[in-house]
Length: 261
Image 1 (cartoon, rainbow, N blue to C red):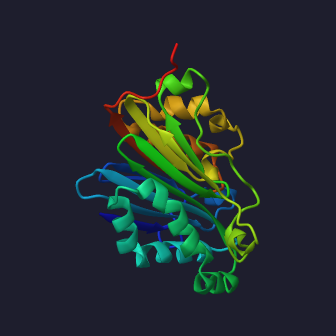
Image 2 (cartoon, rainbow, N blue to C red):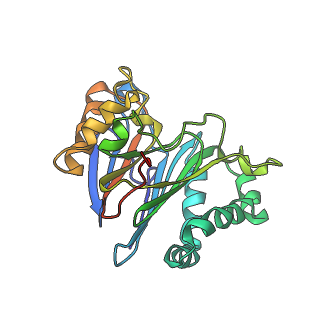
């Protein structure tokens, strides 16, 4: 199952839109026009295995135009078959990083980036069974929510990076490309995987910069309710920046690592 959404084509200005794509809940608020919102430069690409054994998502937040986000979405779509093959392999968690490095450092792709107006943050996430992998360029955020982690005030998987992009300004043009990559074991029980663009965090009241508030909103009776709680708050705040949330949950039957004592 493949799903593509580009905010420049469906901006959802002044409105909250929530939809389910398989196991994934997607929420969008395009920004308040009364506060100056004129366009939505977020974008999303989702592939879900037909047997629902794995999930791959790419969330983008472009700057100065939507061209860079559109280019990355097209790159993922064009290479969808190779990506699916890797996600179906036994070595997916080892193969994904070098695969995306190959795509993003390809000469043809970098040539296209130089001709763009603007640049984009890019957050990739793959979940299969009890493990989660992510690859992050820029300031989109990924979270793993579980009560055992909250006990230690652990919420985020990555940290916002304000000077990394793909596009006209391109981290993959550096002699040493800069990005964040990681893997995490899910805890036993219900885990919530949440990806979001910075429009969720950058509101006047900064409610969701306290990740406890984000956690409490998401971990409700159902994901749609949680996402609507967050986006309705942004709408009431008259948030200018577009905000996109992608969320799914996975029940992990396996025992997760615990201390020996």
